[in-house]
Length: 425
Image 1 (cartoon, rainbow, N blue to C red):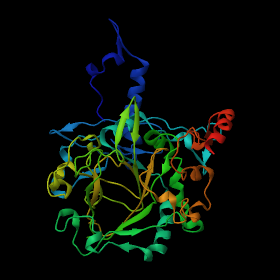
Image 2 (cartoon, rainbow, N blue to C red):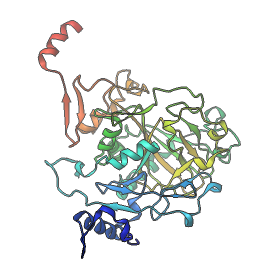
Image 3 (cartoon, helix red, strand yellow):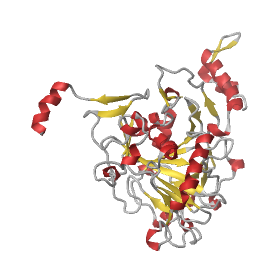
Image 4 (cartoon, rainbow, N blue to C red):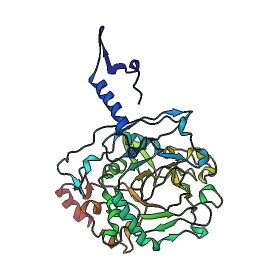
């Protein structure tokens, strides 16, 4: 908000012997600087948190007392647990400079009435995901869609399975992540098989216009759903989940190619991507999803006391999220869940996606033994259906969602296919 000192403008200011004039770059910078103080909103987020309503979001972060923190007008993340909180008064706030969002529809490229070209995977997002191993995408679902999904969940909540049996618990008893021991995590499956409009919002995530280009940037073209999505719910006091995952497994210290993250020649590669859709707010200290930023590049196993949330908690973060936000995280990033502390019920739907040729889970075989459950295909559009393809290479007639939202087949020429067919058969 304070104007930058003149002497720090550097090359952005042109000076003559008698007068000082500003270059076009300098003028644009000053306009952006002035606008940033008026157009910033709580939903514009910061650092590794992005608003889907803009095509570009720049975030600057500073260090305070040797500790890094990334926040907007309200905290976007908190360390876990409360004893490791930063003093917000000592933290330098992040200034965001947002450019003009796209307004024109290019070639009529619309998915569900939304212009897919308005939502890019930006250079900032690429850098921050590569650095921290996760992103929070703001406002993917509208308030109306969140309300619709929650009404559906209310209708199906009697089907939840609560993990009360000791053999089903996901934490070590008596540790900070284990909760009060009276409530377990609640799981609810089948969300893509629910009839009619009950599954509409949940199916929209498969090829959501605000997410497709993020998926392409993190998984490549031809990305596919790898696991059956399911809802996780937590009541106050219910247990979380001990830290797990990692490109190098956080427990064993062994390289895990099935979850690994890598970046080669400027391309990000996630063997498995977690996609957590938020249907309830998770404010600072509420609990829920926690992550160890940067752990997707770790080369050693994690101390057991850290896995259980007993030590080194200042390095574990709980992103602040709102209903409608989506958390994207590499399964190569060590993550887990804190015990739930809020009065309201935590609700998320967890998906996992993988590159075209990767497969971690075997859910795509389905209960029928050949494919995903038949009911899952009902009312899917062409783009959503393409995400349910089994693992195989793009060049072998795999339907691909393009950046413009269209679905095309990538294929070899017909003569090669005709030549190969009798040899294969």
